[in-house]
Image (cartoon, rainbow, N blue to C red):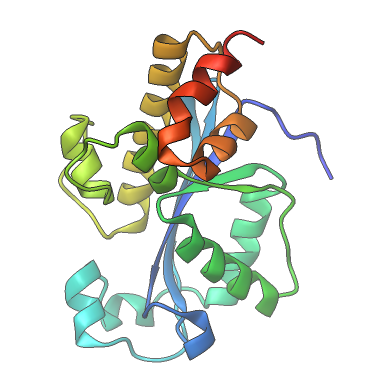
Length: 208
């Protein structure tokens, strides 16, 4: 296991054939960006062939077609590459429980694992931005006026804007609570606190 930089995370997003790998759904695209010292330093994006045709609903929802997937590498090949990419870095996703289920399922099929932990940008945003109209990725991008190209439900585009949201949350915690370089562990703790307790928690943290 290599050393994990405390200030390095990988923000990822899956596009899939459905909602649950337990029901036979598979990943069809993975996108990820690596952030170190507040900057995107690397990217990963690939379509992956799940081994069966996807529904017309998923084609319309994602813009990923069966024709595109027919020439894509098999999912197991792509996931081998992605496992190498993430290595032991900590991971961030918007609605992370969804992406973690698919990451775990796809890696289990190739007998690979990862050494990092997950943080959920959606759970954190619910606690930091209680007044936001909603906490979907698109809603938060609009609410916080985060730069985007208007593309959603494609893996790399979604991971790019999730990364910008993550950096904005770090920046605002540092500014509002005078906590220098908020740690990954702190962000995980925020995601698990009752919404009403977050302000006091962060106020206390900056005095330690």
